[in-house]
Image 1 (cartoon, rainbow, N blue to C red):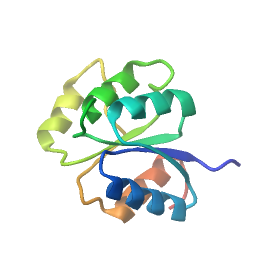
Image 2 (image 1 turned 90 degrees about the vertical axis):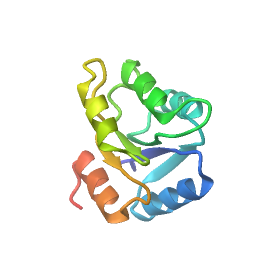
Image 3 (image 1 turned 180 degrees about the horizontal axis):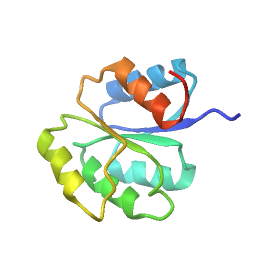
Image 4 (image 1 turned 45 degrees about the vertical axis):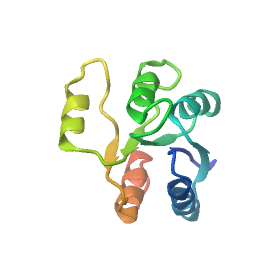
Length: 128
């Protein structure tokens, strides 16, 4: 069975490096992008199995990128985990949008690495 690929979209290089190490140590392949526009384009081109997406980025925010991913027939079925200073208001807002499917998960920075890996395993239907 081919290894699963995770697209990491974050404008902080240290966060990208940390998530890459976490996922690769767990046996996943990773690709990355440093802004929402690049992340959206990589998602369309690479068709990853999962995307982690920072909310607050320059150029195209993670929220805007999430909306684009969610509305594109090529990417709408890729699970997305939002990572940032996610507030309850943001969760409530995204949950109230009928045109947008809620993300597969939310994590605040600093990310609980064990909880993130557990959620990724659940999304992939793997035993953690």
